[in-house]
Amino acid sequence: MTKSGISAFLITLLATNLTFAAEATEPAAMGPRAGLAVIDWVIVFLYASGTICLGWYFSRKQSTTEEYFVGSGSMNPILIGVSLFATLLSTITYLSTPGESLGKGPVYFTSLLAMPITFYIVGFILLPVYMRQKVTSAYELLEAKLGLSIRMLGACMFVLLRLVWMSLLIYMTSKAIVEMTGLADRWIPVVALITGTVAVVYTSLGGLRAVVITDAMQTILLYGGAVTVIAMVTWNMGGFGWFPTKWDPQWDKQPILPENARTRLTVLGAILNALIWSVCTAGGDQTSVQRFMATKDAKSARLALATQLIVGLIVSLTLALVGFALLGYFKEFPEQIPAGLDLKHDADKMFTNFIAFNLPPGVSGFVVAAMFAAAMSSIDSGVNSITAVVMTDGLDRFGRKPRTEKEHVRISRWMALGIGLLVVICSSAMGGIPGNYTAVTQKTSNLLTTPIFGLFFFALFVPFASPKGVWIGAICGTATAVLVAFSGPIVFALYLWFDIDPAIFGTEVVELLNKETGEMERSVPDPISFQWISLAAISVNIVTGCIASKMFPKSKTPSTPGQVETPSA
Image 1: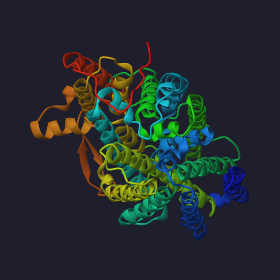
Image 2: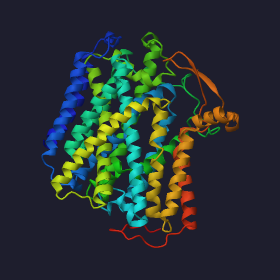
Image 3: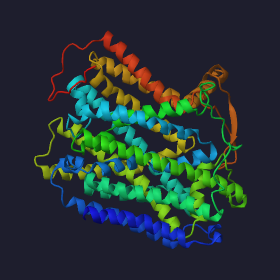
Image 4: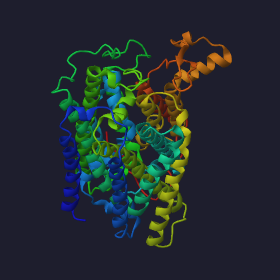
């Protein structure tokens, strides 16, 4: 498959999608229908089959683990940048972004203002240091400066983070597909099995090259699906009358500065949260570092980063417009709001319901394929990165390296398959996590992201850092992230077990109706908003780590197989 052939295929995907939309010229075509049609399922099936075939195609060319994990370190930086974006844009994000702009308001998207600062910090401070160390696992860098225990800590934290994250997104994707098809919730594990199996099979076969190429395909589908929804709403409403020109009454109050810690979202909080998360992900997450290592030098890695940020900006704004379009559409046609749903409280469900019941047959199939693609993009990248870490930081590091490169690749493929199956099994336990899509994403993806980056910060930028000090900083930072993320449930537990008044923490006990059971349930709103998870965690991590490193200085330089360059001040 040539580069021109791949490009033609990607363009065809988007053109075909928009052609389906153009053929639906009658507004009546957007009326409610029975759900996904046969043609929709055919499209999804063809897409899934195509990705497996692509994985098989690339598997024939692999003979080394370097090719399998980092594509021999010379991959196109534009494709790498698109892959970086597609990896970090999960189905949860794809569904939550329209729901956020529809139900809460536009302030969340001021986080995009952090992109230029992110590019400078990552592109000109972090990447030059990282790209001088051509490694398969990012956590090899930690051992050279802080010893084996810190390397293993980073590797284990990363594996745990990605396992939980992938399990959650498989569950959310499966739940959305089940809702669109009208199936009962008992079918969620079956859909999860299918989604996970397809992603794992082509990842275990094709390695990073298959992941990067299919990420490009999936980004086209994602964007095409969002554009299609906007086009259909615009056509049905006879123009852009859906675009909000004033603050909608149902949106939350979202000030520039927080009134208190409970304020769900502010301009300042959105920008700081996005900046810290983006820098920490780029500098400490194997999923991102592995992509940068697949380019030939720091300049190419910066181009990949720029591509990721530009694509992310375009798609994020488009998804925000999807939410605005759906808000305008359902306010214009309130009779099309599904029975039992409310625009504000069920905003996350409006996108999936619109896809299944308002788009013409064929168009729905492409959009469902886009959601399916987003899930697989995150799964394939996570599985490939976890496999690289386990092989490099586990088997290879402790002398369990296979005797031949061919055997190494074979074991890596089987390990990728095993990790994927574990994620599919764990996804069935994700239904108990409370919160809407945006809150759940923030509370899971931010728990270990900043503590992992903290390890690299100490290794590369704190000359007096000691292993004991870094361990203490990581523990305190992680504990802080958990306390902030789950502050509501923790305060509620204190109230139930020790009769401690939630008012002490600036919150109260509330009763809400559970729509599934029809019963009233008590809970406590978070006294600290999720937007402060990253800032609180990284601040505590660095401060306690520095203090502990002074209290427990390192006795000697670790004996290591390599050497890490520390940037000069």
